[in-house]
Length: 126
View 1 (cartoon, rainbow, N blue to C red):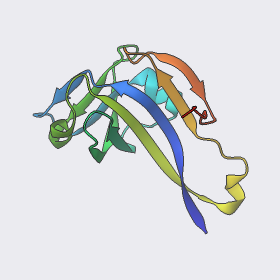
View 2: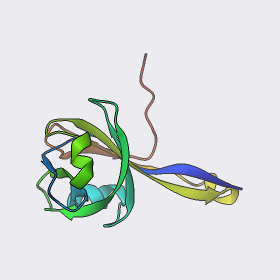
View 3: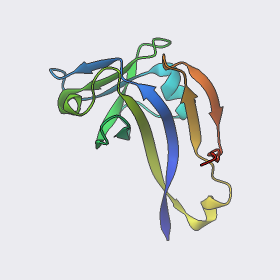
View 4: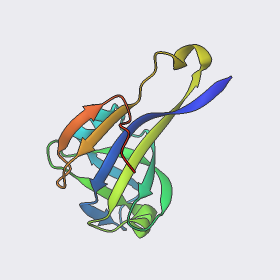
């Protein structure tokens, strides 16, 4: 049996651009892509913390070190500059892979620069 597991997460990135006239995709600072292990043209799911919208697109490389998060094309209707997003990827793993699997988690500051990276989802007090 395969289970769909969180592969990577960019947690609470801030939208820096929203380009309706662009063909589509989400441009992400190359430093963030590398940290999360997200490949260019890989499918990503985006969760908009500000408005609750959830949508799927694909990642493209943004300028390294820029902090860029640009939501493009039709997806630009779902996110505005300044919105907070969670960007996630998933993978189908078989039972034998689960015991050694850990997702790549990337946490950023308000300028989308990496604060820390982790492999465990921290528990937060309620």
